[in-house]
Image 1 (cartoon, one colour):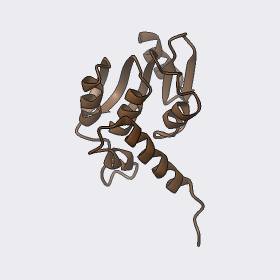
Image 2: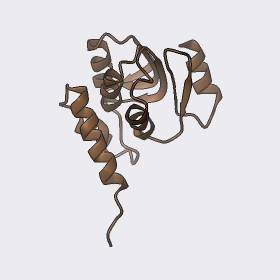
Image 3: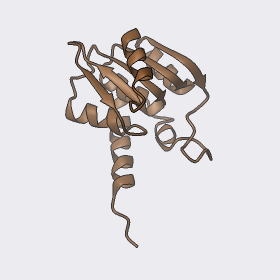
Length: 143
């Protein structure tokens, strides 16, 4: 895990990094949960027994990490609900700072992914809701 933390902090364009059980590293470059969702969608076995280090982990990401069967997680900042999810799933987690919830990008309230998963306990349901959210956000806007 120390290698992943160091990699995260020495590569300024990387927001997160995951390592599979076989040692393969995957860098995350997009803001938010897009890369983690895509990784789980396109390579569902990648994180089984693997580790993830990220700048920010909210409840939605935590539920995805449970779905992905991650072995260990580290975050610069983690929401308390995310910490609860990972701890309940028996996934070792370490972090620099815990916050009550992840704030949205405009600093006006709760992160939308944190909000849509705040009462969700089933990782598959969280995956479905996050997929719907990402589809809505990325849908073409009609004028």
